[in-house]
Length: 345
Image (cartoon, rainbow, N blue to C red; front, side, top):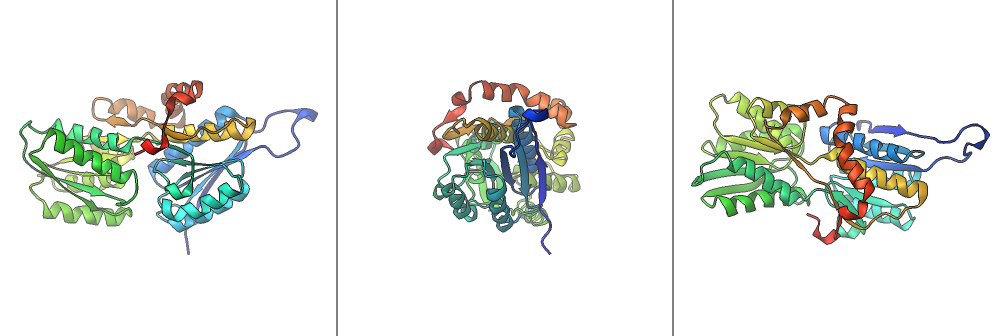
């Protein structure tokens, strides 16, 4: 039996007494991938924060608990009926999702893409997410700081989702930065390290065993860092470097323990907040959605700023306070954050 999807609803009403609105308030939705993951939880929290800033708009966030693109499509179809005032989509299967998005747009349901880019065939005019090539460069920079300027050897690169825009861009950024700054280091891969947690751990186990002399192992997805940190901890004599992405508690613990050099946070809370605010504003007052790419910045996490990030992750209130200046900046001038959609990477 397929595991039940997580559905989290929030309805905020305005008005009192006989002057209260009798009709249902506007309602927006968000389909996220892998609701059990830390990145989905960050996006969910941010989305509700963004919607709540507008007020008077209901919100539903839903998605499959594990990796299941077909269920994402099914849940999107449900939201296209119940959240007709606007839907954000952070999908693991953009190609699979494209026809359903097209059908929703044909019925005048606004759709925005979040995190990894949707396909051009979906014809969605707004994407909210990182410059993933730049995030790859940031991670490569942190690894290279721990290597001599004349380093030679190999770095093993894994990709949890080959062919998925965003993950491929991160891999390209890592490879490109090493080629530019440390040409004596050869980057092997990217190898397919799988999205499923157990399969990812097995894939990295084989890569580590096959490359015992590698200088570093680095992956494009959240689960890559978790798997590599666990493997390095098991191999107490291992001297290779580890880099990854995300703010999974296990990843942050690995940075604190010195097992990982750094992790790059895509700041999914901010992505969700921007999407929620824009959709709620559109649903409530009819403000036009911008067209293009809203680039949300990522954050390099090392031991230098780790304590601050750990405090941020302790509670919803702490996250809200941490991101408030960035959200305020966006709300005050959304247009200044927009870049041409064709530049998104």
